[in-house]
Image 1 (cartoon, rainbow, N blue to C red):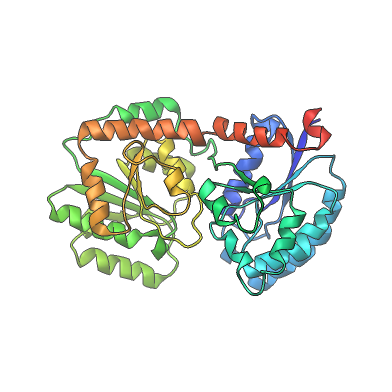
Image 2 (cartoon, rainbow, N blue to C red):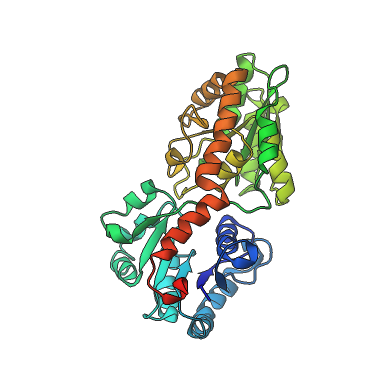
Length: 381
């Protein structure tokens, strides 16, 4: 039977890393529409819904014991490759990887790291990991990046035959059905406020303050706008600063903040209700934001910065627009896209971009092409 093993963090906790690992496993698993027998090893500590639910000491204890459990599990696997979506570029994560995970997997299996952060290249530059990172690469059969841009960041340390690009995708719990996306693209955007959505962790470098100031600028220009922010705060101080900023330029009456939203049906509804999804991110470890893929699925035009993988995710003027991380630039991009015929074209282009590059069928095909070229006979049985 054709098989593949996946070693990574699965929910809970329900964070981006765990979600993409579960999505990858389901995508390939014959029980969820794929064609392979997928074996899963969960590296997540028993943390509950959030990472903060367990102490750092308990988490360290869990990872120290994971090596023996992983070694036993790996020794029982049928022949086949191992996909490793939790490889880390951080100092502590890298030391865990080279000291625990890789030795437990043995040397006879093909292991493919799947990189979900935009700072993987930093381990080759950090004084504490620059000497061990090349050994990690020598051991791996390949490194899967989410975009060509992210792969290129590592070109001087990873040979081209080991640099592979496969996109992210999203699960059926948040994917918008084609008929719902089509209906959205045909709706009128005239005669009501423009609806703008920011959905992300409330991390300052994700750009939520830029969005807030852009809302105030649009109001100053006489544009009726409603802005919805959804995401968990990092601190109470950040939340207070947000509302202080909202009141200062007079944007508060057009703004609502929902907090963290974990209900997938509610997330889907937020994308469908929005006229634009905005993400003026400069987040240092940004890779390929799932939120942009979710927005494209909902036929929601994306306005975002040219950062990390984003220039390869949307097409300027076709499925969205690029804007500098600046309130005036963001307001200009929204205002330039409000005219009904322009918005209709962008909305249809957003869904077309999703179908072509990020839909589960498209990404499954990318993975199966990669897996077909791997050596283990189990994949060709």
